[in-house]
Length: 302
Length: 285
Image (cartoon, rainbow over all chains, first blue to last red; front, side, top):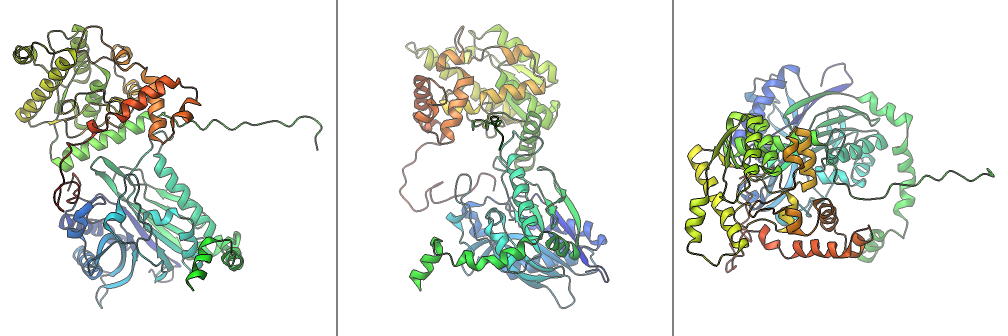
């Protein structure tokens, strides 16, 4: 964090891993760190499955690692990059938790004098298992959406389909998140759009709606590159708490988006359109509505 | 309240579209070729059979754009009954792009086998020619260190209108998820000569053969019906959109009876480690 400035500098990395080659991808991560370190970033975000590629099928059991190992490897790259100050890094990875496997993203503080620190691990809750997707065949879903503290303030991580369910950013914002980080790996489809893939246009719509409704920054980092004919569609972007796209990348090239996150912007957006406050007030009535099936089921189990 | 009639604004019909943004599509497919060939397989040269038809012409254009014309090898493989215009159209494409082009006649090889199969009908002969072309293509691939690139489009793949383990064998195919009408749109955008774009598509296995007479339906109609089938619409819903029930049935039957042509051979599963059943690995790991 920069002294005296009410915000943080973030960098979003549109990354193209070599499939299954963890060491090579860590080296590429180190090169990105070396490029970004002179700009003194506070937060660097990599996409989902950044060190392995997304479609692994059964090889996920060979390439998954535990969170402390993932954190240590990222921290090694940061320290080896020539960086002289700490930085927070988010990256998606396949996580092995004592033989249970998750699609996870880690938030890790790198380069600190006291050593590497795992701030948070989010385990993807919505595992797409339809069409081209087969996640739940190999992975176990996460069971909790938590908010954690960052230099910018409270934040939450949603991985790919997590963010497609409007309730997820809503819950994150209600829990206090002012920043939502979305590492993603989205196979691009739909080529009839004006200037971008239909799937990327859909993403923009979802992310800008979530940001504007709740007054949160949304940082989206997308994987790029083809995997077995399926093109990961990049689309890395930064969305302001008013729902404006501050910057976005195309689908195909590796790149970095840098963005300044201003704390005041969250407050101003919420003051102008206080939807989150309105929701907080009305939510008990919604949840207590006995016509919502999930509530009935909870009562049956009580 | 106004006493005059209110203006009525009708919503557009919810017809799934086959429109493509051709420049976006071209860039996407070129990136596919570069990633899958150079980055994944370490091969920067492409080889393809150039028939003189629009599918292989389009793939030649995409390869030339993605890899550079000097890295694209086109092989013309005529049989003695092939149309001379196919040969000249193929040459026109190669000349326009500045790609390598070679002609390897398959007549001797095909007739050498057919001497032992005097009862072969047109269908069998066509399959022998298609498989001979693939044999030549793969051998030339080894000779030149170039990766065979497929030219089958989505319509013919869905209709089963190809020779199994022949046209479908190249390890990468940039146009296999494009319907024929989308192939036409992309070809026009890329400036493929009108003589190639506008001529009736033909497998050119027999004189005066055309795809649409073989299939019994135009590509324009088949593509829209196929798209609706793949999106999950049942026949009555497709007919309700104005299609002839007989044509819907024809297309549905072709799709339903050719699933096997879009799969690897069926293998008896006897273990808990059966390949592609229990032992699951992506192609690019």
